[in-house]
Image (cartoon, rainbow, N blue to C red; front, side, top):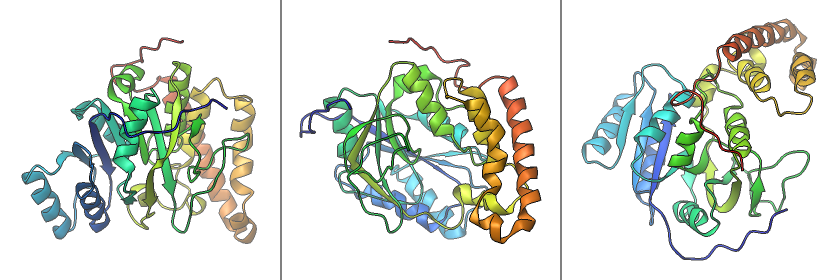
Length: 311
């Protein structure tokens, strides 16, 4: 495990906060207002709004916030988390871009901790702590069984969660941004991006002081696509298959592809609701062939393929 020097209160850098939102109403407005009240707060807030028709109160609030230049708004007609994030990345005016979920309560040091980590740890990618409902920080290091983003230990990691991480804008653009072939739920797009960044010689620093509490809203966001256990649609499975097909550095990836349909039905839900097994297998098969077609045409990145220089 690499040693990382403790954070101090020295220089910071300007941060653009990007919120890609879909199907969220008052909880989105609450998230924005939390950020606006922060001291220090982000230097700008960009809301990439993929919701076609908001409730009137949400529409009025967004109009007011945009009109008084508290936020900048980008509208999208067709929802795509990776396309929305790419638009936010390209539109950001500052050299550090912080991606946040649209249903959060930020920790009081969120912005300052992200800004300081970039300067003091000389790191281009900083992943922040994410606490799910009812969850508290735990002292834990990354291991062979993965990493929990509720950890309270600063460390270098190999993956990140898309709802709380910051990146040097120039580096993100050089990497090609986020692959827009991750469709619907876009499951595993963060893992693919992290893998691409690590292959280019970047490091991902986990900074627990940059914390958010994720409210996990019941509607909107990825939950707009339904529950993966009770659908025949491939909205969830396609991303996993695409990630495995694209990420050639994953050990045993072909075996993982072959084993995924079996893993998908080896759940407590299917044990007690076996009539959902055929539906899940349909979703898995559909997802695999969709991912195969996406992989065959190559990644959809900003500016085509990324410019990567291995260190």
